[in-house]
Image 1 (cartoon, rainbow, N blue to C red):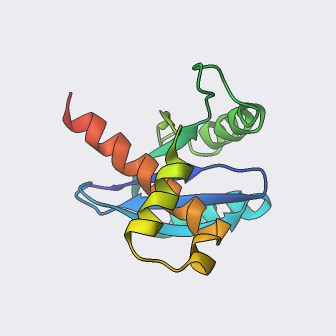
Image 2: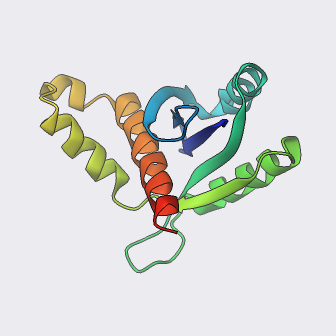
Length: 139
């Protein structure tokens, strides 16, 4: 099996996570400046076999697209053109930042580390990926 890659796409930074080859566990991969994201992905996809890319779907609490959707959608369209052999899917990202902060607290991270937005983005991508993989198990 190949890995699944998830992206928590942001205006300034994007968090990335990847599954193990058996697609059981999600692990944080990196946080990349969004302007460098496509270059990072080109390098990563050249080195690793990725079966699918999951991108966080930005929604508001009333299930409407959030402000970030106007940036995410063109990015996803570009991914689909660059890598037509890799399916790209959306997965609801609501609450992932809050869940990432809670995971950091539960993990005993000091306040200074919990304020590290790059770490929050990477953990958010991990939560998106783990949720996606768990939702597929239920099918």
